[in-house]
Length: 112
Ligand code: 5GP
Ligand code: ZN
Image (cartoon, rainbow, N blue to C red; front, top):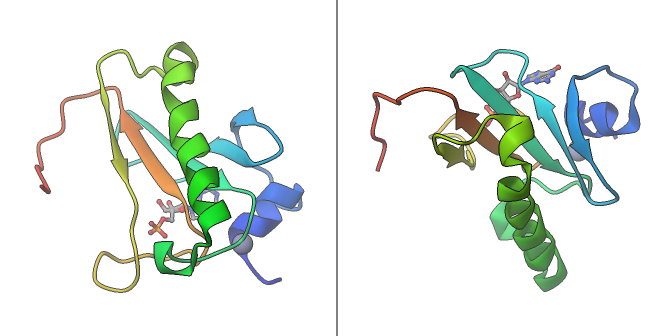
C-alpha cells in the first residue's frame, strides 16, 4: 500500500521511534509544532474514525491508554495535547489515522 505511515511501520522509511508494540508505534514528528511532538500511529491502516470497527475502537483505546505510561520517556510531566486531524478542514495530510502528542511548553492557541 502506498501509505507513508505504513512504510514507516514496515521500517522502509526511517523514523525516530520512542515506543513500539504489536499494535502501535510512537515516533517523533519530522516537523515538530511544539518542543516535543510525537505521532502515535496504530499499525492497522485506516484513515478516519468513521472507518473504525468496534475492534479498532478498542485498539484506539489501548493506544490512548499507553500514552500516560510513557510520561518520563516522552517528557509529558507538564501535560500534553492530543490532536487527531480528520479530513480536509483541519488539514489531514497522511491518510492513516494518527494521534499527535504535543508537549514540553505552554500552548498559546486554545483550539477548543
Ligand atoms: P496530519 O497533517 O496528517 O495530521 O499529520 C501528518 C504529520 O506527519 C505531520 O505533522 C508531518 O510533519 C508528519 N510527517 C510527514 N512526513 C513524515 C515523515 O516522513 N516522518 C515523520 N516522522 N513524520 C512525518
Ligand atoms: Zn497506512
